[in-house]
Amino acid sequence: MIITIDGPAGAGKSTVARALARRLGFRYLDTGAMYRAVALAGLRRGVDWSRPEELADLAERLEVRLSGERLYLDGADVTEAVRSWEVTAATRYAADNPRVRERLVLLQRAAAAGADIVTEGRDQGTVVFPDAACKIFLTAAAAERARRRLGDLRSRGESATLDEVLAAQERRDREDAARPVGALVPAPDAIELASDGLSVDEVVERIASLARARR
Image 1 (cartoon, one colour):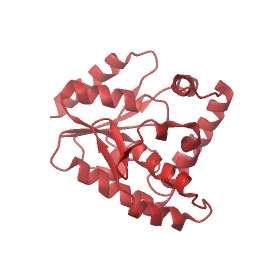
Image 2 (cartoon, rainbow, N blue to C red):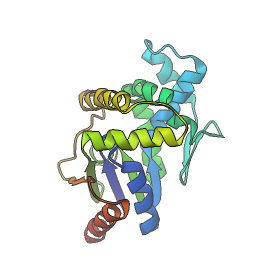
Image 3 (cartoon, rainbow, N blue to C red):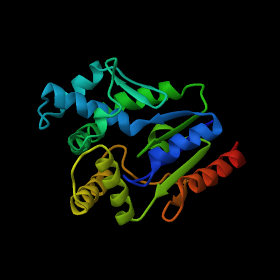
């Protein structure tokens, strides 16, 4: 069974998806981290962002692998490295690149083959797994999402203000919605769930109940 959780940045997708996978005994697939890994590789290799073919060529040579909740780039654990503010700002170059998306979609489908999986991102229910049994579109108010993101950054020792995070989030929302491939839109058969005012356990239980009904 495949459960997809799509939604904007800061909606709680990663936290909820990880907890849901543990609750159900499913594998967890963090597809956003895969795009971050490509962006991290681009930063480390000094890719010219104005030449998208450079990043696409690099992506086709990279080994990007998820093992449980750990992310590996060419064999090295980059789980924490991809969450930096610098990588976040550069990830759009990977996400907007059709050849990068094509490469990572293939890797995502291969990772899910024959498995019970909870996968989260922006286009999981629309592009990557259009036939998934259970599709969730997780949302939250913009201010709440920005506060969550700021908390994540500060927990890793990075400095930022709420205004900076909110401005970056608004820009990212616009870019995600306008993306020519893999745009952030709910799948027609997705169930929209707002996480405002709900604990992680409450959100997980609601999705688990929906999944059990769909199975």
